[in-house]
Length: 578
View (cartoon, helix red, strand yellow):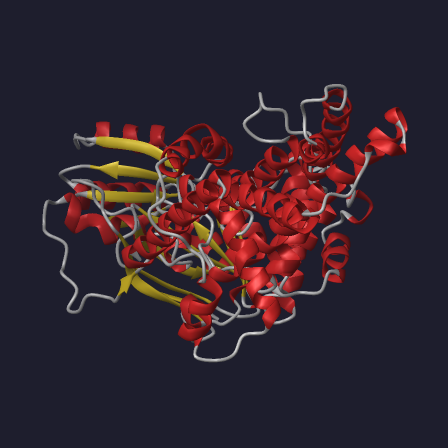
């Protein structure tokens, strides 16, 4: 069962709240329609229940608010608007990625594809899906965790009548198994045809909460709305004439001189009022969800009387950060490998590196390490480092562009697990790219110039460590900058800023004469640690010190430190805001 109690949105400026003290229930085993005209507060009510908007009130899902549920995807399935996803990703790849986020096995993706009728379209790209297939995929995403409650905003929007029939059949089957279904709609006839219970709202307030049979009997009948200063007199006259003519006419008197007449027409009511000299201020045909109950509840507001103040304010609703994936490493691997971008970038880097290595080897002035790294003096960074930085920037940049983990929130969760997973995966791609670039360069030189050109230098280990540190550092710089500034372009700019802006500053510092020496650093570290370090540790410490002492290494270390501090600052500020 879903219980919404006292939902009230935060008003903007001087405007009234979009949802005001809304209370209703959606029982288990039944399909509940939240009915209302545009701007009636339907979507805002759903967002308040899901803690996506700030306000007051509480929503209980089988007795627990959403933030108290350990695994929300296994309790609540949500479909709000379109499904965010990279247009080049396949439907199956999108669902497999979300399976890792929800903690579900990968086989669940094929199961829900079959449930929603997309079993044969799993390899189709998201960018090629029609409106109907996109809605089916959104419903499949909501069903991934096998939730008890389904919350859907206008699920039939843009669907054909045949697809509508299929959709509501699926929702009714979910309810028949004991689940709870709540969906919004603006069509009262659709609500009467597809729901078991209809909750009608207007102006953000509850208008009626009825069983579908009562709703169809009282709210869908054609009626004439009349406003007159002599309501009682006109009601008596209309009823008397209807009895004389043996017509079935029902007249309902309401507040503020209003009448609702069932079984008649505007022409008949107007003629009757004219014959008896009754002035009429309003005369209109009505049908739909704006019946007498709505007027009875909002009559005090229309008379200018203040609305009654609640005796106790409901608890505040705080917008909470999005949940991170339950299996972050698996999620990030599927996200990275689910599109061709990663493969295309790596292939382009390897081709460019091999070609540049061949060209650099034609001159005698270029050292062999620079030839293998394909790093001419004219470029700020080698192609492998630039490619690693681009992969890192897209790792977070694509999350903000296609926020699959944070639908309708406009941001992605700043969880430590997700950050560590992205750092691990981008580091792995960077090391793989660095290794393949050197191997491709060496093989190209062997093919073009023969095997005599390749010689293993004496400091091959230190060079390899520097090369690995450069590519991984660029990948992390791009990733962190994209995470801080929420755009992939900022990550690429941060990578390029290291050699263009930071390195010259570091070179000026190292250009000054040194007054101190780091000789004896391993021994002092051993004394500081208080325990005996192995002899090999001295070699490792000195190797790391030499790498960091290089201008590029120092610049990367400074840039990464600044970006990590900025990322943590924005994360803590976001948590404090919630």
